[in-house]
Amino acid sequence: MSSNVHQLGASSVKDRVTADEWEARVDLAACYRLAAHYRMTDLIYTHISARVPGPEHHFLINAFGLLWDEISASTLVKVTLDGEVVDDPTGNGINRAGYVIHSAVHRARPDLTCVMHTHTAAGIAVSAQDGGLLPLSQHAMRFTGNMAYHDYEGLALELDEQARLVSDLGTHKVMILRNHGLLACGESVAEAFDLMYYLERSCQSQINAMVGGAKLRMPPAAVAEKTAAQFKKLPYKAKKTEWKAHLRMLDKTDSSYKN
Image 1 (cartoon, rainbow, N blue to C red):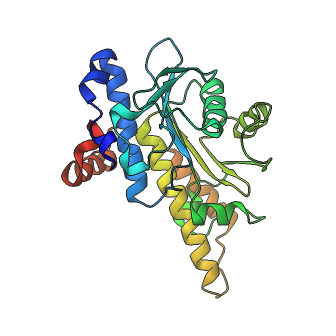
Image 2 (image 1 turned 120 degrees about the vertical axis):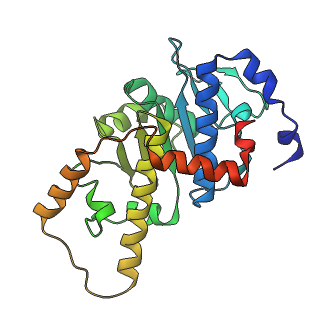
């Protein structure tokens, strides 16, 4: 991590925000570190955002220029839904493409706390396949009938794309951005990460199965639908075992995400 980021004092940020906002900052920073650990990064690009608790409709997003393993609670930038910077501890500003995608979802879906967008090799590969995500694995069958698609329109810099993006997302929490990457949203940071982790694993399994060259075994549609329904009966709980285990891993290896 760069020295200037190391030297950024957490106390000054923590002292000027509410306890609820600080908790949101720590959770979001943890999510960035976990995404880096599981190799879901694209240098300094792509984003994870989290709604700030309170009536202001602000959200947190990464400071432009930081690698995901550099991000901590006090480096996150707080912005309005209209893109106005409220608090920028590093002075780095934000990436406009991240603002366009994330603000669109936060504005349209008040039920969602966290929005996660990635450009992974497997995610991009599946996004470029005409059939999209196939029910080739148990992980993938979890998303049968429970995900959306959005066609590529160029770099996400134009505000008029926001309406089409949220229309395509609808009431879903997961979407494949065609020829682009993956999007996962959650009612908590933990849920968004959980969905993205298994969506990413689904894409990895699909690409690996295809590369193997053997004839693919596609389960009956009824089985895929049954599996999706079974997963749907197991609603994600933000404090369940996986997230706690992930935080323990971070705390053992590098707890600076809390700074």
